[in-house]
Structure formats: C-alpha cells, structure tokens
Image (cartoon, rainbow, N blue to C red):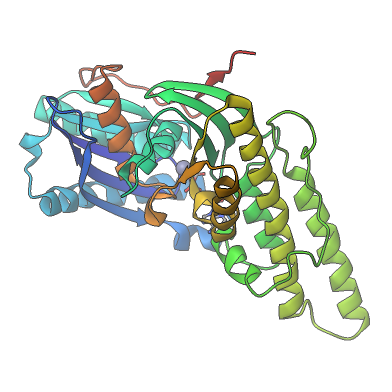
Length: 356
Ligand code: KG4
Ligand code: ZN
C-alpha cells in the first residue's frame, strides 16, 4: 500500500509517501518527504497570519507533491490512498490540503483518508530508528496542545490530563517574544537558555502539586513579563538601553526550567499512575534539549524508556500524517473513503477521557 500524506493545518506545508505491505506486520516505512515552512513569512507579524498561510499552502502544495513522487520514484497512478490533515488547525489552511488531496484522489479514482493532526504527532515516533511499542504514556507538547495520554494501541487514546490554558509551545513562544526573540521563539529561547542560569529567577510552576495531570502555563508568561519589566526599569534607571545579553539568557533559562520541570514531573506522575514504563514524547516542544535531557535522566531512574520522534519530525510535517493514515489502515480501524464532498474540522477533540 502506497500512501500520500498532506499536512497544511498551520504554517508548514508537508507532503510525504509512506508504504507498507498489508501481508506483513512490519511498521510502515517512509519513502520520501518534502516540507516548506512559512516561518520567515510570518515572522514580520509576530505570529501566523491565517490568510497568508492559506495562500502560501496553495502555492506550495502541488510542487511539493511532484517533488515527493519524484524522490520516491513512483507515479501518481501508483498511489493507493491520499491522506490529509482534516483538523484541528486553521480552517483556510486545512481547506487547502484537504481540497488538494480530494481533487488529486478524485482525478486518480483513488480513495482518501482524513487524519487528526494530533494523531500524526502521537504516532510520529514510529518513524524513528528506535520506535516504541504499545502501550505507552504519550506527552503531546505542541504549539497548540499539551496533553498526557494513555495509549493502548492505534486509535486507543485516553486523555489523562491537559492544559487548562496556554500550551507548552505557546508558553515558550510568548516568553521568547518578551525577550525580543522572533516568532516562533521556542527553539531560539532554548538556544539562548544555554548561556543562562536556570535558577536566576523563581518563575511559578503552576499545578505542580495539584494531584492531577493537568497543566497551566498562562501565569508563567505574566510572571516573566513582570520580571522583564522590572529589569527594563532598572536598566533605564542606570542609563542602559535595555536588558543585557546575560539577563536575557537568565530569563530564558529560568522560563525554560519552569516549563520543563512541570512537563517532566507530570509525565513521571502519569507513568506511576498508569503503571506503564514507556513514555513517548511528540510535538514541537519535544525537540527541546533540556526537556529531553531531564526526561532521559528521570525515566532512567525509574527504569522507564523514553521515545522521541526524529528531531526533524517533531514539528509539523507530512510524514506523520501519511504514517498515521498507514497505521490506521494497517490496524484495520479505518477504511479509506471515496473522494468527493468533504469538510475540515478546525476544532476536533482528540482523546477520550480516561476511565476513573
Ligand atoms: O507541533 P508544532 O510544530 O505545531 C503545532 O502543531 O502546534 O509545534 C510548534 C511549537 C512552537 O510553539 C515552537 O516554539 C515549539 O514547538 N518548539 C520548541 C522547540 N522547537 C519547536 N519549543 C521549545 N524548544 C524547542 N527546541
Ligand atoms: Zn503540530
């Protein structure tokens, strides 16, 4: 089975080819992929501009499909299923990928398979050299979501806890903006943090002792804003133009320490609560080095294993969408549908609540 996957839910146009042999239990394999990120275009506005995102997806999607088919050495007629991200995400952006997938499938006389973006992230570690095995606890940390889930198998996702306000990636991005870093500042903040002291400022660790597995990151941004304001005032009083490099690095390191500590502690609590000894991290924030280092150390202490997606597959991409479609088909839990009328789901709940 040859599956083409299209991702266009936000500011990345991703296309990929994944194949599996229906007669064998082996994991689906990535054959080719291509990605265009719009980050440079949105930077000037400090965030994603939905209309610009949609227009850029339109420009990119067909050339990226051509590129992937060529790199995979396959013709469009070889495709068995065209998969696409149906939600959640920006409505206009989703419509571009969904529309392109539907049009292509209709023209080829092939079926389509709509995919949940978060399931793509969740299953992306299965594309790594060290894939996990079911069951596991998943920590899904992206720009829009922060969730802990108990995963029994493909399509069997129970929600253990989630953020009640900002997502972890959003917290990274908002703190980054406060110290003058470009959107999306998560990766830049973590680079700057390497030069700073994580204990320079005691930023709050909300819900750390709440006894549940929920998160809250909105207060952190407020606390960082207040601290930056204080430092700016002191700088101005002393005749300096703004924060020093060392101060910015200290704020970055301290903010990162607060976010990472909460993510690590809650992940460990989820492992203890479920009795599972395998943790899978997915989503853009999963690329964070400090998070990886602390999770590795903490999980080693409790003899648990941690799996991550390849660094390049942490943020949005087409490979994870093609992979999720392939794994759902392989597990027999979803049949592809005839191409034709379609809709996208900008808001689309993912996991069901875990049994008490
Ligand atoms: O999963 P993703 O590509 O998009 C969503 O589906 O939301 O995640 C993007 C998020 C952004 O907030 C970005 O700042 C964050 O992931 N991110 C990072 C790092 N790399 C990306 N946050 C912290 N450290 C990083 N190295
Ligand atoms: Zn994403």
